[in-house]
Image (cartoon, rainbow, N blue to C red; front, side, top):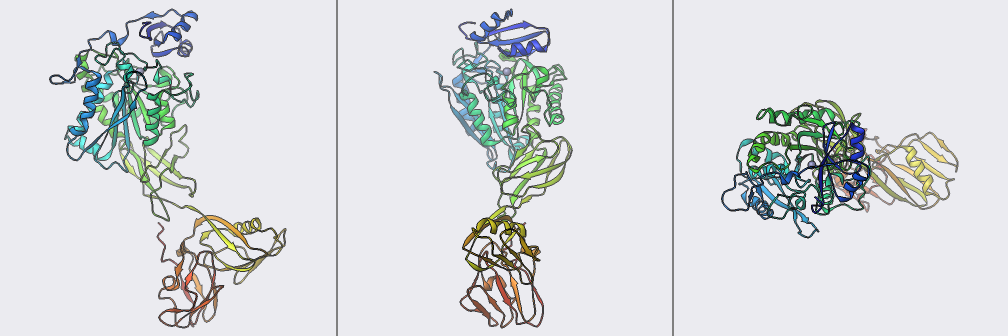
Length: 618
Ligand SMILES: [Zn+2]
């Protein structure tokens, strides 16, 4: 064991408190209340001995089994482990094995910096159009000697590349699937590239990767390391890049679904959903073999309730990665006899597909900008009175979001800096997909207008209050003793300390005359007003002060269309134009943002006008 750098042993204990104490020293791999199974490196092992523990050394799992290896010669029937080279060859061959209408892309997270430079490889599988779809992540064997899942993953990739079963076709059409069969190749091939005999739990630097991730309860480096191992850092980068909707990570040593949290006793906000999908997975395996995956509560357990650990990848993915990742302990024997591997495939196959299908259920939708009609990425979708501890999700590249959740009626709040938050009620149904109507968020705009000393003809296209305008003026001016704001009928003035007058609101349909003592720039913030909701009443035979509430400058003919009658006049602060029955004549031709105007009607009728022509809002 000394030369392997890793000790494998059992300890007898008398309760959870003791397990916690052991877990603080070394890696607890399993516990049944009276016995714990542990791994330790030399330093940890010495520490245990010093603390008075009496470890019962055991033959490491990977050194007990018949590990028939396949090196590429003959036909492979999924009943042998793969040499490292054959594993790489198989991964490299998947893209060309994908049948028509399917895209399989090889992903190489990099070569490990340890001496063998082994690669962490994965594939991305979809129908070539991944945008707008939930992403699912399968990984295995971050503990190098827990190898059953690696073979399951390789066989699943093969199936997803080649099977024309309608269920598989449906999955590839609707989900963007990522699979990484071996996320600790230095551990798996610790005995050399040609065998998994001698595989060890830890990576090439003797680190237990599943105690090594940032932990929301115990800090950035719960295992006391000073930097992240490549195997962990690359997986974190992947998680942040794609924000997987769901995932599962295969381990061995037990047969149970282990759901969040590992580090924290309070339940995950989606605990009811976790129990649902974990029982679903386990129950489907029981249809093939009733005595498989029946540890704990019929094959499922809360991680903390089983035995708590810090720095687990599951907790990282859930808390920091928006990914509902579950840990699947898929074989009591970590490295089972190679001839039995097809059995594990048979037990798990239906469950593996069903788990991917679960990310199509829950609540889905799209979020768009109400003004530009463009999708918004990075909108936080929070389930009110429900989400906590990283359980909210956010929108992806084309504004899509995917929120697995237990059946029930919820209020979903959509928020992003720069937008007015919006809430929508939705009802989720177990085992069904619910699509909300597209959400349109109003952007909060900032408008800066420069005023000249003296009188300014002003209007705005933002929904703002008079209070906002008053504050902006006072903030922008060194001398505030002679500010006046006039509408066509009312006014208000500032004497340096208080406002007097009857004007009490700002309407985007109207022009205001603002007097200031010096040139200044006022900055206003608000949502773009909807001109449709602010029609302008043009008085008969006289002057109406009008605003210009659109979001871009516009010519008179485009802005007023067929509204004018002959001899209507529009005045800006700089010049006039007159309508001759077919066109506007005069030096003044364009309406500008931030300016106000006087419309002089030649008609005997009161008329109503709406600026709505560039209005593309939703
Ligand atoms: Zn494990």
